[in-house]
Length: 555
Ligand code: VG1
Ligand code: CO
Figure 1: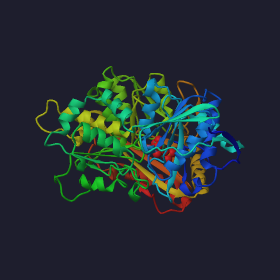
Figure 2 (figure 1 turned 135 degrees about the horizontal axis):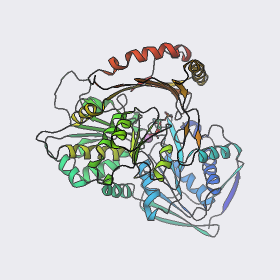
Figure 3 (figure 1 turned 60 degrees about the horizontal axis):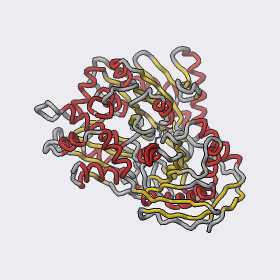
Figure 4 (figure 1 turned 180 degrees about the horizontal axis):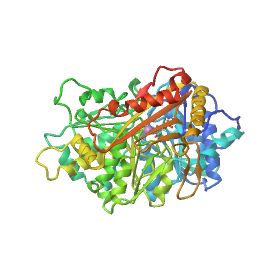
């Protein structure tokens, strides 16, 4: 029989959940009590609101370095806090969307919540990043009032409870039961893909999808970037839909993502971008017709056509406009939403459909309330996040299936292959085009970043009615979230300046540029946005204030 001990501890600085949980360098997480303190702080927050004792929770992650060690520690702290049962994906593997499905639906949605171990698209390995976040009973990231409370606990914690159970074998499926202080504590190692795949089969028409992917004139190239989407992509695309395994690249989750950056964008998914012929000299070469990638924890997606890039803001707009392609949306859309910096492309679709369009701050947690209230069906972020109210996280594999469903639908009565580019171009014809670009200034000095924001705020005061600091009032619970980015808005274009909340060290500044064109649909992004970018560089003096020569990443 195991016993529970109360261990004395002291607060660890910096355990403040950001846009999506706490993200830190592994070297920082290795300090004693790091995982114990944060886990206990989550549990203390849960106990203020719900009954943790005897409950079921989910614990798993994206397979990055240190996940397995952290899982063993969390299991012991869970047992020490009298959790009744923990579901762990085999080898500790569960994608972020899969955790959401399991919390919401496994055994009738009995789980109280879950801890997800991931730093998402940030690199992994002993010298890279680790992350941890708490998801609540609706399957979504803990909202601000929870994360604020978790943080308060991390800065006042003085002890945690831990059970002296042995490490649990999480490499094979099965159930292990311990007696902890006279009560049972159960660990169930569950299949990593089963619940998620069943969910996808209830949303999409797999016969239509199979028919599309088996067309001889339609070739897919899917890159999992050695993140956690691999097992899901193999199960769905290879085992169920019959896509050859060679077309699903890097589908083995690796602790260091093969040394790469598991970030599905034009910069980091370079092999896929190259394979799709983007930026290639040769036009009309034998490139695949459809390309896709996911990030480390499989909640992001990038969609590409033959020599064609779909911006995430366009992607969600196209999906909303064509939701009839997906059986799950048969009853129509309840509403659509985007994060504030995401282009307004989806707004035009919402207006045409006559449904509500919501704008929320950056971070998926803000969509959850709208979904729970039955007001929102499809939403997205410019940062390669797309999803729907089937769960409470953005969902990378879902987005790929949604796009394939739209392609299948567009090809029902067509004599030629209607591909990604044709679908997007006809969307622009109908709704106009939102040219879009984002500049990231990564890992800059925090003081300089704050100074930039202060300077801009002061300059903004001369532009009343045109420039502001974005503030959001949740239409469901009326909670207010302030300081969510500085916006400069004219009738034709927008520039937004925002500090990132997901970095693991220093600060990252993001600048978002957008211009709407109803008629000029064939400009390059440079042509469309060049003068706005020039204006912004001068207006903000960003290079001088941050002591840089330019952005580190442009997407
Ligand atoms: C970034 C994105 C945001 C996204 C968040 C988490 O946040 O901009 O849109 O929701 O990452 O995504 P920030 O604060 O760095 O801009 V993930 O896939 O990293 O969980
Ligand atoms: Co992610």
